[in-house]
Image (cartoon, rainbow, N blue to C red):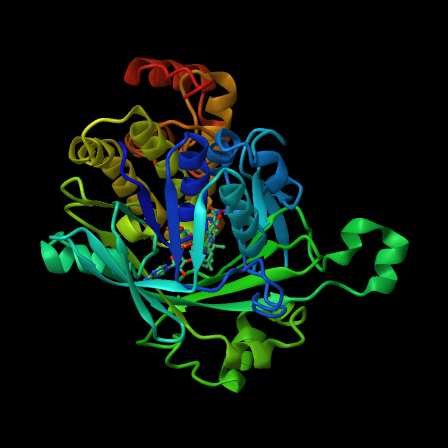
Length: 463
Ligand code: FAD
Ligand code: 8RB
């Protein structure tokens, strides 16, 4: 593989892929539309957007030698803190103990750190250069600068890490259709913020008092058809996201067009949360409503000339917190294939063969987790199933692992987690037979039924 590798997009997946490829001695050029986010004055002032980093993403960072640096900026989240309408809250742990937690990290910090690492590993980064056209016949690309100036460059081996609105995908599709399907969820999102708590109390009560809510949790205010969530930032603030139907019957974003209507809605539905957001109206007015959709493609590559990965190939809805984690897992798989060398068309086909069933599986599980987060977390039957699952996992750890744990804390293929989860769920339903009391199920009988119905879980140590 002598030709240089050209990455379109230096976001999270592009930057990490650049690190991995450059570390393997490959020639890497990265073209990124935006300006260098490491330069002073380029970061969106004051707004911190965070992401949940889980085991799959963390493992990819370990492979790139970047895990320790990232973890210095991460806030541990042990579970979901569920806030009821009545103002009560309780923690549902994600894992069995503190070895199974997820981490809140700032997108900006993560991106800048990976860009530094990419440069150090020898990748060449070109900022303010947006892919604007591709000539696949002559292997040339056209890039547009912010000033409108266009320049040409050799395409090399083209890799699209330019996100959900991928320009490379559009160019590939114009050349030969990719079988693209976009499924809108019909719900959108808006970001809000809880600022750090009063510093006076922090001085007395210590570090964690900078936070207006429990810092080590992912907060959820489930309300049936919609919800709010909040993730902690290192500085003591929280990024809040409201998820709501886009239009249709109240409540929807169309119905809550102005901040006053939205504030009345929050006073009724999320009074405790509203009390923590002094700049609610200003934030509501100035932050746009984002759309949520799932992207499916029949083909991720154009022969051996171009390949898509990350959101460019498989954008998903956010509800499992796995978009970045899945994209990071992609980069390790692709770097392994590219470093081994060989015919690029075969190698791209192999990448799609391995990754697409898993991307499809996490897309499906992310959609399902919306219902779980906004509704089921407060449902007695769901809670009984969860409780029985916890008991079975303790009794027969080699045979039962909650699907959430397989997705979040192991490297088992997503497709396996989906399939195993369905089988386990059917068993739990059968054992509970409509009951909402997990303690009424005889655990010896249940464990025997489990072992009769399902093979043991794979060895998880390096799943
Ligand atoms: P992006 O990060 O979108 O990067 C694409 C890059 O390409 C950008 O830098 C862009 O400027 C550049 N680009 C675009 N067009 C061009 C062009 N024409 N030429 C050159 N460059 C171009 N995932 C999780 O795992 N956990 C979470 O908790 C989580 N939270 C999220 C919260 C929010 C608010 C959002 C929006 C997403 C969240 N995700 C989360 C999903 C995650 O952000 C994405 O899956 C991930 O960023 C995908 O990485 P990417 O590099 O493929 O795309
Ligand atoms: N994109 C997350 C989870 C699962 C939480 C659970 C859920 C915000 C946009 Cl909605 C969401 C999870 O089951 O208890 N782990 O990590 C991250 C999530 O949303 C992120 C912050 C988000 N992603 C557009 C907004």
